[in-house]
Structure formats: C-alpha cells, structure tokens
Image 1 (cartoon, rainbow, N blue to C red):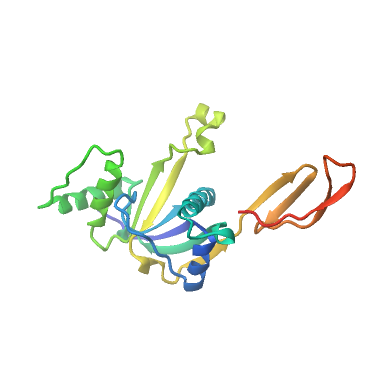
Image 2: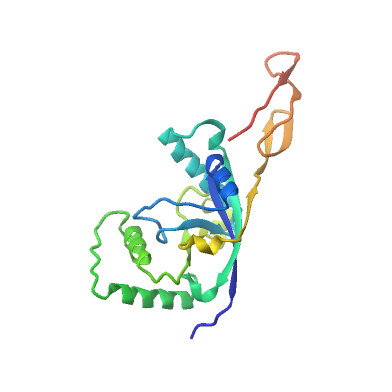
Length: 231
C-alpha cells in the first residue's frame, strides 16, 4: 500500500558562474546525456546539503578548465538553491522500504523481454543502474538515493566521525522531468568564507575583498595590497 502526500525538496545544485547566470535568467536547468549517471538522465541536486553542492561546483570548475572553452570569472564556483514540491507517488525514494519496493516492481516490468549485458568494467554498476532507471515509467519524475561518498571528503578523515562510525553520505536527487521545477523557488546562494592573509582577516561575501593596508613581511614599511576576486 502506498500513501499519497506532498514532498518538499530543498535542492542545492553545484555549478559555475557561466551556467548559473543562464539558469537564473531562464529559470530552467539543462543536462547532458551520459550513460553512467548515478540515477539516470536528469538534473541533479544534493538534498539539504549546500556544502556538498559547493564541493561539486569545484569538480565542475576543474572539468571546464580542462576543456578550455570557459575561462576567467565565468569559472567561479556557484551554488543554486531550488525549492520545489511534488506528490509522493511521483517519486521513488530509494532511502525507504517503500521506494525500494516500487523500484523492484519497475525493474521487473522493464526486464520483461529485455536482456541487459553487464560487463566487468569498473563503471558497470553505474551504467546498469542508469540504463534501468531511464526505462522507468515517466510518472516517476524524481529519484532519490543516499550514496556513501568514498572520495576526498573531510568527514571521511575526521577522527571523531571515524570513532562514532559516521561516514560521509550524499543524498542525491535526480529530477527526470524538468516540468517538476516549473514555478520552483530558484536563487543563487552566495558563498561566504573567512580568508587569512597574515594579520589580515576579512569575512568575505561574493568573493570580494576590500583594499587594506598590511605590513609587508619582507620590508619594514607599509604597502597596499589590492585583493581581487577569488574562484
């Protein structure tokens, strides 16, 4: 038995300045087809997790740097918050028993008359999962699953978390149908950080620094340092 109710999602999308401007202007997200998306084709968000989205924005920046098509300030890291709602029957939440039951039902339906050939490739499980979900009924507009992050995350190296058995997780949301985001509350979340330059400590917003006079360490005189924007 499935119970129908409204689900509110606070999604955080890590990207760069070049793409964020387009999203904010059009209020639309786009995505590129890949055969190894973790939850199938769609628009990805971290649920309730700004920090992980900001981490992912760094991955996006590094990838675009290698491609060398986007340069300069357009590579600045950005996070967009997108709040939207949908009905529970239009979502498969693989973090729940109900979601897993629905997933298995769809998997059985998809497998009728179709044979999947799974290779020994390191990315085989991602490709199989992606191909499977891509064939699910279109009424399932959002897929959610919490992946255990094994990559270079600080929480995985934190001694306290290790002692407590707390691992780094990433609650990922894949929006399969962009129509779900029509009328969503979309806004840019400015990154704030504290930057230390010797005796200069300045709480920053939007990556900008004020001009300050600091003591030059190699010369016994005062010198102006003009700090520009950071990526």
